[in-house]
Length: 151
Image 1: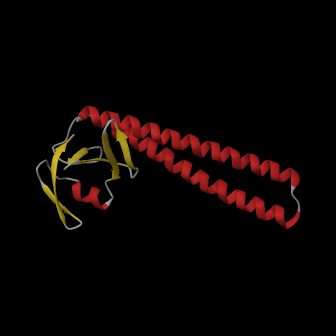
Image 2 (image 1 turned 180 degrees about the vertical axis):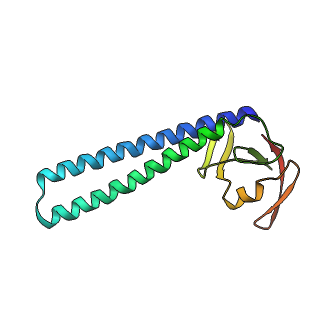
Image 3 (image 1 turned 60 degrees about the horizontal axis):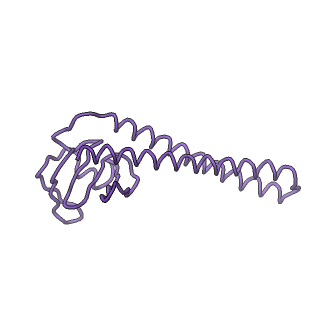
């Protein structure tokens, strides 16, 4: 399962890099739009359009900043070596047929034929798992779930 964990980190980091690139391209397009709007617009229409583009630019900047944080966080967690006997930040946890990487809230990624869900330790399921050991059972949304493996 350690190999799967390493591959999950690689894929997640790649997806975050793609996300960052998309935000950079979007930021560049908005900046280009602002420059072009400067040349051709006048009056109230100009002010409204410019304000909208400025708000869009601020939104993209925040998204890019968040993606940088997620990238840094994944790199930090990927560097943690060794296996803890309990679930902690950076652990890959198998519950039934499901795999959960306690890292960032990102959702599902595919690692070969496996689906791995990236979730934050602060998520409801993450909070239920932190500190638990293999073969322990947790209750989540009224259902018992048994931790089969931790890596």
